[in-house]
Figure 1: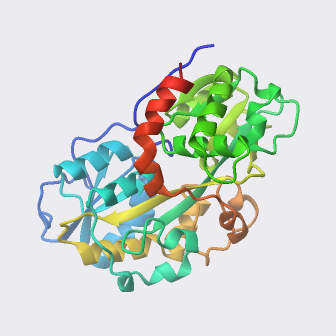
Figure 2: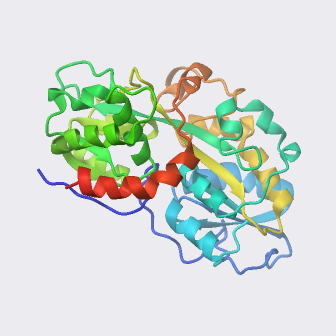
Figure 3: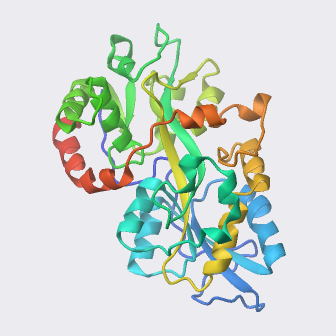
Length: 357
């Protein structure tokens, strides 16, 4: 059994190579100007590189046509892209980030305060998504959940609880998110609950994590690592975001995804306007478009993002592999990201000293 510890990344997504410059559908590069060569307005969007074809066709191109604008895209993972904004080395107008990283951006003063009157579709989304980091900042355009995926051929019991990961059925065959990944702080909170606390207790949380450590095959920083190990039956399971469960099922058809009895965790991706953007109103219109029933429904049916717009109605196979319905979303546990960011340095230090050794 071998353990690994990786550095920063966005766990919500597979590791991506940061593009040296952004490109729109026609390959136009970012140049620091607010207009394109053809005289149209230019909106620069910083995002992840997944499902690029879908976003180009279903999200960007319709907006470009309606607003006579050229959209330019810069891609990379959360940490890389946030760092570029912080350094002022990009002309990004709008940025997609997980709530964990968006909170860091807020604390650094990197985002504009939104005019919510310009985003009427906010009235159509789940309450948890409207202002996850405060009324002045961006909404979550998708809410997923972190639960447990496992292979029932390797685990001879029905998994129902986070505490089951500490059981003998998972001895020596668990993968756990790294502390520096988006889901890492959620696992610290999980450990506190498994230790029997209603209120978060850091010492007892790390005590439980140290107890679990011998059973960990790998502390993963890339979801692709979990998928590969699961496919090859190097692990029986562990915590993972529901959006990746379809990949596990493709490799192991009998795989199961569980929302633990103590509660699954809300994984939220946000969208914010970057401080100093000269396209603030256009960026707010884009946020409104991203929250629209049309975009949200297409994203859900394509299995790209779980919808937050309550007017999206799905049934049958369209509901599989995504976090869907008011009942499901309202039961999710939401971490206080300001609290997490205030403590993450100390937690990372303890994780390195006490858990991964």
